[in-house]
Length: 204
Image: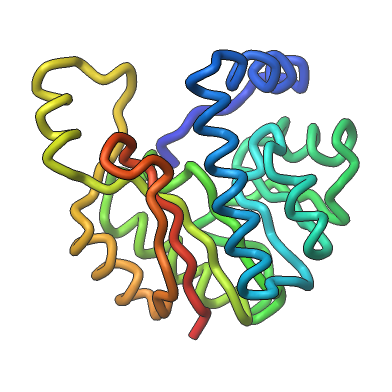
């Protein structure tokens, strides 16, 4: 995986306290929460929901309103944080998104938020999507960064703070289709200004 590990539960806690403290980031958070809630409610997504990666658990309480929540993360301390400090998830596991420790069709939904922009290789992304298609028996929600002319210009003018993969819409559609996921709907967090998209799929 291309994303970093937190080194302790206190490290996770400190990140949670600072991540969305500024007004612009709070706006993004509120918009993301609204879109996710709308998708869950509109499609009556319930049952067991795997939150992967759980991170510091930003969506755990929202997901709990719709079903039984599991927490998964490549990092040991986020999984432990979800289990011992948040106390929402029925199950917390330390796992790799590309090799999930679940049998086929074992959860009703997989919620994957702010992971795929850190996956820089096509093969790695498709492998993850295939795991989602294998493990979920109904729904998959994936967030992804989609390329646009605005972001292409912005990146030429300003150096991004971290390496983020922005995919053309056609490539994203091709990759999830190859994995067998069936598109339902997709929403922009802030149309025209933010590359982040939230997409809903049916499992095959």
